[in-house]
Image (cartoon, rainbow, N blue to C red; front, side, top):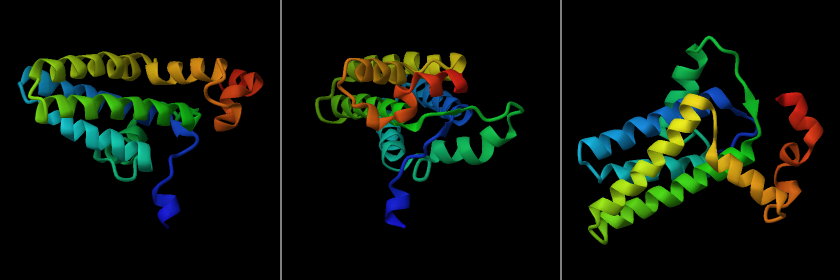
Length: 164
């Protein structure tokens, strides 16, 4: 049970990922526009939960996978999980840093700057299906920082061509 709880789905439904990204955009915009930098902690929890358990412990993940994505007319588009998990890790790092800036160092401007960067990245994912974290993952695989075994579907060009 514990091993299943702390697992990340592979493959991932890209439609659900894009719905989660839209939720991230919404929360980050509320934080910025509403001057509520403490919401960076809410975002940090969500990202950390998604890195550790996929959608299982993430409220946004649950809403996306159980409520919204199944009701979208488009059929699921399955993509490899490791790049999406990496992207969630990048989001975790950014939102934890934003939370530290706010709660520990009292640097609201730095918190808002990071949240603004998150809005841009999550908007690209949500609106265009362009995942910056996935692109970084791809570059790191190409230069050998991430070994091919981490994502066989990513490293096998033939598999990628068939799923594109």
